[in-house]
Length: 106
Image (cartoon, rainbow, N blue to C red; front, side, top):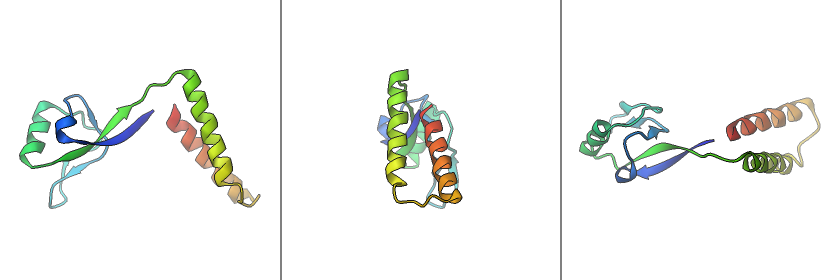
């Protein structure tokens, strides 16, 4: 599972991956999400006075932890949809959300 965390530039090391684009003051993209950062990237960002960046953090879980997260996800959606109607659209929305959230756990 990959999460995105905002870190101060001095906490970021080469090899980390951007979780969101970095833009300059005029809105131009300096680095795109998904870029694996190098020393050169970090030095350039520091020169441009970029103070922080969103970084992808990959979390590794055991199968038992993943199954617990899946069950938490199912329980949370049951709670969120507890007052939803029983119509086809409601069921389809709930199922789509469930599939999306379970996919994020893998």
